[in-house]
Amino acid sequence: MGERMKPGVGFFSIARMLTGMVFAVSGFLKLVAAPDDFLRSVLSYRILSGTPAVVLARGLPWAELCLGVFLALGLWTDFALLTLWIFVTAFSIAVFLAMFRGISIEGCGCFGPKMSALPLSMTLTLDAALWFTFLLLCMRLSETHRFTLDRKF
Amino acid sequence: MNIFKKAAATFLVVLFCVAAVLVGRVYLSGPRYGLTARDWARARGNPEAPVWIVEYTDLSSRQCVESGRYLASVAADPLSVFYQVRFLAKDRSALDTVLRFECAARQGKFWPFHDAWLKNQAARINGKKLAECLRRPEIEEAIRDETKKAEALGIRSIPTYFVNGKKVSGLADLKKLFDAKFSWESV
Image 1 (tube, each protein chain N blue to C red):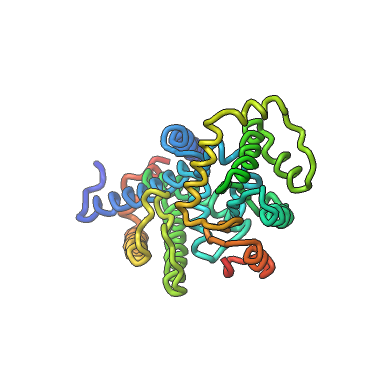
Image 2: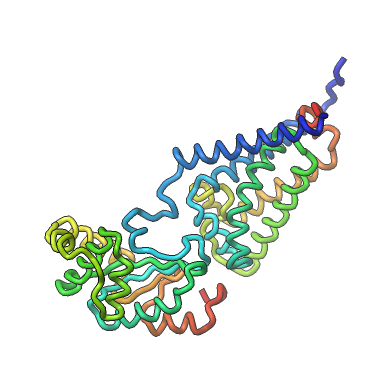
């Protein structure tokens, strides 16, 4: 017989899939948009410039897309979870620094050019929510690992 | 054995992601870098460079030629600067000059023509095609339209630059910006 469903098991699996999808959609929208749109978002935070900014602008959307899909499907779950948690932490710090330095940023760069016009405070709130979701997922790893492809291999 | 299956699954997922992006770029994306074919003909450098300069100019004016020469020297590194030329032709003389540039661009010879103009040299472009192009009313219309758009952006004098979106009027201010060892703090 399969494992008996415990309360909350469904919640953590669904939270994992939804979180993965958020990143996959975010990466996908950046990748299909004009490449300079995300580069401009990266530059607007005034943390990186030159080659590091270009490398980040080109590489990050692919990482978000692939890791997001991995997390949603439950493939390399721990790695995807940890890496995306680091991304959210780094992005939250960047947003916080921008607010602290009073930099005016038109688009946070979160979901491509058409869906990035969120105020920084709202972006920070969403990031905080994501950050705590990751914390919960990591705290309940065994339940997060339910319905994952990892369990098939 | 399972590790091979997992590697195969990973490969398939990555392949699916790449395919989805390629299909998405065909059906969902707008013009590359937000530039039209006409813009591309008058742009040079790496569009992913950290510095984007859009120059509004009228190369019938001596000031603009001087600014163009300066910009050619500071924007010489195509990897770090993306440089785009747009025109603002307010009078007949400016319009006549700009028309030549537009027609050169339509022959794919914008930059040779531009560089030769700055050096007071003759550019190697097809004179017959140029003469035919100069007679076409839609060319003049396109320039007038470009001028209207520039004026709508609040550009009243030439040369005016947008350096990473920041408006800079005149050569003196542009020099100040670059002399301050161009940094993100200054933009």
